[in-house]
Image (cartoon, rainbow over all chains, first blue to last red):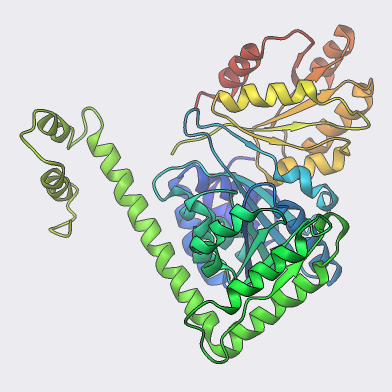
Length: 323
Length: 133
């Protein structure tokens, strides 16, 4: 199938899975043809509930995504799953293995699973991920589950695009609880202690509940993140998780927070696209033979400092005096 | 960002041997490709659907069970039915040369890589056929 942008729009809205898949690739590859299609798709999106799954590697995010999708399918809902795995910063390659944990879903055409490499371009991850979410949203999926890479700064990004952020942890990870204190505690709308058949799970649940309880700055009527013990492999605790996601969505709707979240996401999306475009232009201008290639030479000879060079580059890129 | 080659490595049918396919997977990853692995014991229907959802450039079928003449033609036929014959199909594993010949000649397989293949040859072949990254 040759990718003709105009065709893709029609085919996607007709439910053609190949068209949706192709458009996501175009987005990942920074293909400019994708932009025109995305512009037209925008008004078709905004219906899906976006669930983010984050947490340390090996905690069972993929298995939980699989179980969630099965529950939603049993309730007659359609599901999109986006799994982001790390791209090697050295070779640019990636081994995308989340699908292996979702074998029970394969064969169901109403579950669209897409594996994405984080690719690591400046702002590239969030822009491509956001676009992929929007594509599956316009494609008509009721729930979109976004599974983040297991480690580092990137996982915080999920907050920017998920309506409900689920943080997955497991028992016996004492040090991890320390890590949770430093940031993860703030992003979770729901906490899952997976592999709860292992020793120490009740302790982990209690620790988390304690930290949530004692978190300063609580407001009356505000959402209190529940802590759920699951054994995802066996399906234990999944019904509770599905129930809490629904309860969280209802809370967002009743409190008006959903609109606020959507506004935040749109801002993040806009900034992401803008910075990606600017950085793409800047990278091109700095290449050998590019319109700003002399700047780095002047920096090398210490005639020009990086901040002044940035001013010059902004002028060359006609960004005005903004930078 | 440019186009990145995406490869779907699969284990069709009842076959529990995945050492080879995982080694190939690592080699392709280290060559800068995005490699998706299916896991063991997949049906042709599931593999074709996944290949389409993942929009891969290459489908790599690892077969050591002896069922290659039954399963591979089913997969390539299904790809054609889904208007997805542009996905390049490669096979590997234990496939006798006379079968390999038939798969390439009559069933839309681009090439069969047998035991002892240097992974660099696989990388080079994919790059040559699909453009470098």
